[in-house]
Image (cartoon, rainbow, N blue to C red; front, side):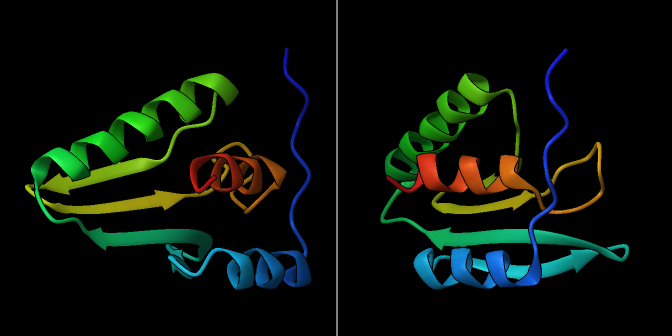
Length: 98
């Protein structure tokens, strides 16, 4: 059984967003979420990024919600088991954006 993640403080969320300019704080049904929206040059670039999302997701067993239409991509991320933003979300974003 994997360890329960630790919720991020408001300051930790602000620091993460300062470093990761492509991510924004939002909420869904009262739950804080991190949102990424990007328009790539073409479908191939968008799908390449989705492949990276899949590899990071599987490596840490944490999965974002993904929407893709041609070259447009949207991700939403939060930790479902805690209904909050946690160290798991921070780890996901940090690995993905490296």
